Image (tube, rainbow, N blue to C red; front, top):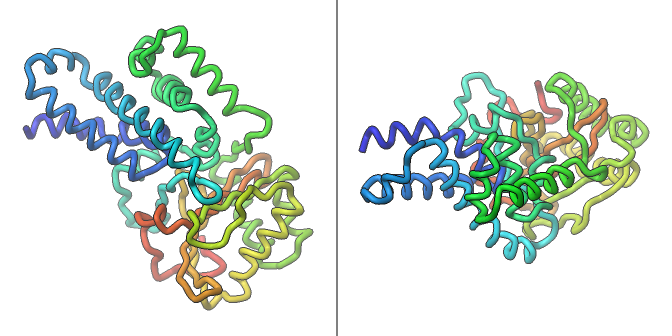
Length: 316
């Protein structure tokens, strides 16, 4: 059994990366990979099933994708009843020296995902999402994608093509910035919110910027996206400007959120409850095109706690 485990562990990071892109949830991705392991171990214990495991990587990818497809189909029903706006469960990686990310975090860090991509993937039908991730991200041939989806290679190609058009639609927030540009823009964003000056903040925001907040019904939050630079700027000053006014009650640090620079904060809500926030940004041409604010405590359970150096404004 040790050899089976060693072979599977060599594939775990890749499987986690794929499952996370398909599901948008770290916990669901880990569950899908664990179920893949159980099916793999079961297949090798059955001589008939063992014969189907000819190419391990391909077999594991197909099996994991089928599990994710089933989860996505059931998740659509749950998310239709979700209170307020929905954002993915983030993978947050501290930038602290000496921090050792776990396999789920390493899987994201090796190939930047970004909350912006995960949000737009949520628009897709389950079959489109699986087809796009398998083919465009992991180079799985359409014949094998078709096997996962229970369709033809031609139909699988069409599903991926429609998904690709949706991902690149004009109304999708753009994120093209490299880490250096992300840092410059995030520093300017923090400085602008600290200043409290709307005009200064508007210089950092794209005209069509969008703000999305997910509290899961635990805290008050906008039930619809806030659209446009002026509206987002005023809303943001109310949210982050409060951090500057009550800096002694705020802990914050710069982190990687799904492989992209973002903020992690801890403070106290106006009703006295402790509150954690993870904020991700999409950046294009030197401006913020989207702000994704995750404050649902159920989705932040696995986020590493803030260290001793945390404070407001966050230090680099």
